Image (tube, rainbow, N blue to C red):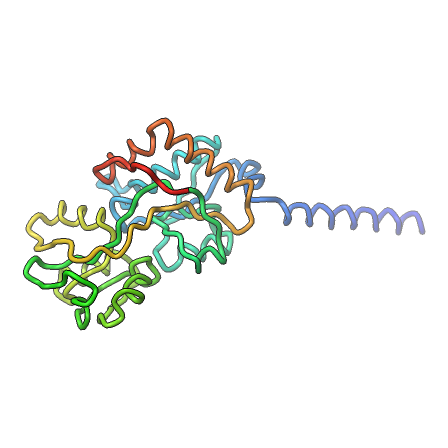
Length: 261
């Protein structure tokens, strides 16, 4: 009986140890064992991520996700996200990475880690050519649409506290609010405004005020150093061999140039 109890205890201990090992397994090992990587990407934010005429996701962020998956030798699983939930999906381990035109902020750095930059990104306020709004002071009292939780949302709060900001849950709604006349201006990236102009050549649109140059980074789970190192190695090599510049030309219309670490 004692031997039987000891054997059962040993089995239970081994099972507990196995469970602890699995739960403590780092993200990179999990990805390699699973043979797939789940990446949060935008599908409403051209040219970084959007659904093409073939109903397939495409854009700068999509191509970066494909590059990283290819270099790791694993299958890519794209997980559509919006600006408000792209960090939360990473925190709750619904995704392994977030590649969603993500800017680096001190607040975000408390809960996730960041790769080196893979793409340039200028934030700005856009509006009709006849509207006077050439400085932060000019934005006072102006109605501006912005995507909730985005970098532009944070920048408007800091740089133009007197503006009347209307927040929307996704980028399509933010742009639609401006195009339908619900707001006088909208805050977004220059590449996004360029894509809007291409789709709507008659749109009365020009850049009014630059908010920031906020390069894009890959979001990685906090403390996942092995995965972060691997992602950084892929990006660094892509910078050196011209892949990043080629992707930037393809989607943003210009080479990426010098990007910060």
